[in-house]
Amino acid sequence: MAKAKTAFVCNECGADYAKWQGQCQACGAWNSLSEIRLTSSKTSARVSASQDPRYQGYAGAVTGIQNLSDVDLGDVPRFSSGANEFDRVLGGGLVPGGVVLIGGHPGAGKSTLLLQTMCWLAQQQSALYVTGEESLQQVAMRAQRLGLPTQNLKMLSETNVEAILNIAQQVKPKVMVIDSIQVMHLDGVESAPGSVSQVRESAAVLTRFAKQTQTAVLLVGHVTKDGSLAGPKVLEHMVDCSVLLEGSEDSRFRTLRGMKNRFGAVNELGVFAMLENGLKEVKNPSSIFLNRSKHPAAGSLVMVVWEGTRPLLVELQALVDDSALGNPRRVTVGFDHNRLAMLLAVLHKHGGLLTSDQDVYLNVVGGVKVLETSADLAAIAAVVSSFRDRVLPHDLVVLGEVGLSGEIRPVPSGQERISEAAKHGFTRAVVPKANCPKKPIEGMKVIGVERLSEALDAIFEN
Image 1 (cartoon, helix red, strand yellow):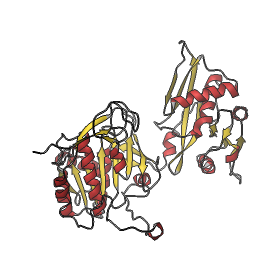
Image 2 (tube, helix red, strand yellow):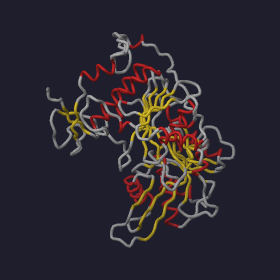
Image 3 (cartoon, helix red, strand yellow):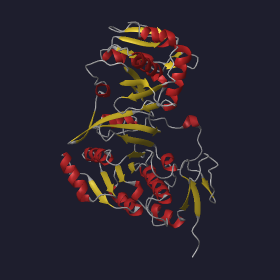
Image 4 (cartoon, rainbow, N blue to C red):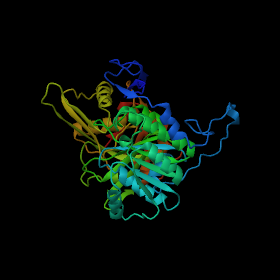
C-alpha cells in the first residue's frame, strides 16, 4: 500500500510546506502549521468523471490564450436572494457559479437566514438545501415555526461530498446551501471531518463544482473564540464572497458584514432584526442606532461612518473619570484601542487637555464596529465633553480624521454623510474644511475646520 502524501499548511495564511516547522515563514505565525493528507487522484477522478471534459478547470471552462481587450465584458448575471439587505452585502445579489462563505457565532442566525432565503428562491428556481448538522425534521420544524413556504425546496441530509455532488448533478439546482462545511468529508482524505485537510479539500471540490456548473453555492462556516472563521485561511481565499453574521447576546439586531467580495464592495453592512418569525431586514439602520436618551448627557455625540456604499449615523459615548490606578485604563468597545491612545496624545499636544491621570472609556452604541478614521474628531469631542462635563447639542453631528500634527483631514464621501445627517434632522455639522458642500444644504449649518483647536472651539462655542 502506497504511503499517503501529506503536507503542512499554515492556518493563518494558507502557505504550505513539505515538513513541519515551528514558525510560518510567510506570515511569521508560531505553531500554526497543521498536517493535511492530500486528496488522491482517484478521488478527483470520481468526482469529475461525469462532467463535461470541456469543464475541467478550477474556475470554469478552460480557454486558450486571449488578449485582454478581447475578453467579453458582458454584465455579470445576478439574481436576488429575496432580502435587500442580503443583496446589498453580496454586491447586488447572488452570482451563478459564485461561492459565498457565511460565518457567525452559534445562535447568530446563519441557518435561519439561509432557510428563509432558500424557501423564497425555491418559488422561482431549483434550490437544494444540504444539512449535515441538523436532521430534516429539525429544519422542517424551524420552517413551520417561521411560517415559510416549503413546497418547492429540496432537502438533503448528507455529509459525504461525493454523494452530494452526484445528487446535485441529477437535480441540477441553481442555488445550493452546504450547512456546514466543517462536517463535510471526502472518502479519499484520511482524516476526521472538521480537520484542516477535510475542510480544505471539501471546499475545493465544492468550489470547482460551482464554477463548472454555474451553481451558486452558499457555505456555512463556524467561527473560533476570537471571532475568525474556523479552518485553514485558504478557505477564505477559495470563495468569491465571505460574510460574517454578528450580534450580541443581549440584542435582537444582527449585522451582516462583507469581509471579501469579488463581485462588489467589501465592508458592506446589512442590518436585520431577529423576531419571532425570523430575521427581518432593517430598512433604515441609522434609526435604530440613534435611539438616544431624552435627557442629554455629557460625553454623548453623533458621528457619520461609511459602511460599504452608504452612510450610517451612530452614537459615540465617552466617559472620563479620575483614575485610582498608577496606569489609567483605556477601554474601548467598537473602536480601535490603539487609535484612542494616539488621539489622547494629540489632544494633549494640540488641544491642551491632559488625560494621563484619567480613566477613559469609549463605546460605540448599538454594537457597531468603527473601522475607519472619520470618527477621530467625534471621539476627541466626546472625551472633552465628558472631561469638562459639557453637554453637546442633540442636533450636532461631527466627522473628520485627526492627524498627528493636529490637522483635520477630509474623509471620503463627505457631502453624502452631511446630507444623510440633514435627513435625520441634524441642523449643525462640524466637518473638515475640504468636505464643506459647494451648495448650502437646507436646514443645515456646516462649519469647516482645519485644526484641532479650531474644531474644539466650533464644537463648544456655546
